[in-house]
Image 1 (cartoon, rainbow, N blue to C red):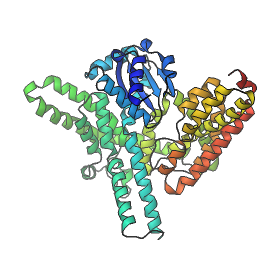
Image 2: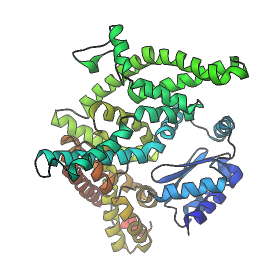
Image 3: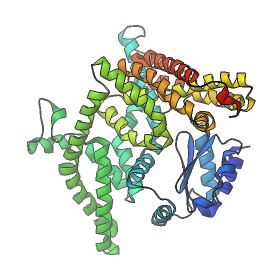
Image 4: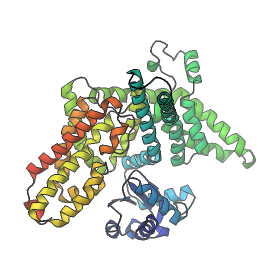
Length: 471
């Protein structure tokens, strides 16, 4: 089945074009918002060739397709829908989604965060790889393994230019995507994000006595203060201000007056109130993370690493893992890398180890169906795509879903203990090795191996071939 044929099938089983409000992709899934979830045939979708799993979440479904394929199929779905939505009126879509989905405020916030950052993930991964490789080449040049001039120096500069071209202006991209979600003008959202990293903030802060020359990062107001948390909240304020002004400005003056007044009012509030407040929150978050995640106490590191890895699979199942993205971003901005992501990535490796143990038990129990499912899903699992194993193997059996996390905890403890740091975040498993900082790649790999073994051993102890005979 081609991607186009699969896209048509997905739209058909989702209830048809009239039932699909929006389709967008994340790393491994096509996420579809529905007008009426009752019209979607989830069982048939799960049985469709090329679909690795389906997650139903209120008025939405997530069709698991795997990395790469998810983007291609989603593009085909959007083409089938004529752009990905039934109507271009975002307000109508919002109301339809609200009516079709019963979710609490917490889930709504998690979804909002996902919608802002999921489109940025490909660029985050690419930038992380470029920065990581640039850093590796720089290290090798410093150690005189590579020449300090010529091809390798030029390559280092190009890689760091491309990586910095995104991560250096991350606040702008966040502002644009946040504006899209809040219904504000996207260019104004990007403008607000750009203002947060503008050099003039230091001069303004100095004039008002808010700048700490000795320790700039401790300033009440400085460039980048508040990070992406401040930008998101600032753009939300911007959306309210823009709509309020537009209602009161005559149509003939709207194009000139509305954006000017919107940015003037929001900009003042953003720079002098939101940035310092968000900075206080971000600094507190980093301090807490420093105690839990970057502790110099090995006992704390082992315990926190184990618990975080062990609990991550249930978080993925509930869709709560997207709520961690702002924490990744805060770490990246304040620490130059992400230490939480490598720890959580161990959860998928624990599941791989559990699946191998189940395969051997299924072989003894002569459960060929389970053996076939695992054989098909394991390669993806090694590459960081865990959905086929979650929804095809461990979750239906339930017990290995728990033992996979318990086994993964050992790898998480090791990764936390060795302070592994990533240059970005994205897919986990073996494919995440290149986005680890060069000096941490080996320890990340060792953590994966420990998680494979941990998931295998714990599952082997907790289950037997009897559990697979009728599975």
